Amino acid sequence: MMSNIFMAGMDLVRWELTSLGVDGPFRLAMHHPHGAIVEYFRALPEALVREAELEHLMTTARRAGSNRTEVAV
Figure 1 (cartoon, rainbow, N blue to C red):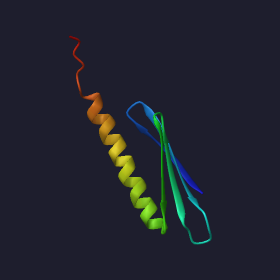
Figure 2 (figure 1 turned 135 degrees about the horizontal axis):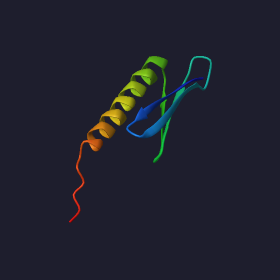
Figure 3 (figure 1 turned 90 degrees about the horizontal axis):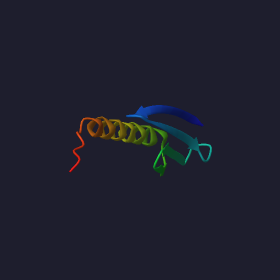
């Protein structure tokens, strides 16, 4: 099993990559304050690429969200 954490804005996100057999398949689980994303892959490189994509999406979305100005009407 491989795991790590990162910050997406103020949110702590934890991911785990687990081998379900000797040579796969592999389970990627990303836990965030609003739930979890779980995906399965045949090969480890595919899972690692997807983890990087999801991490980028989450950190970019949080960064963009923190730049918005809330206006009360």
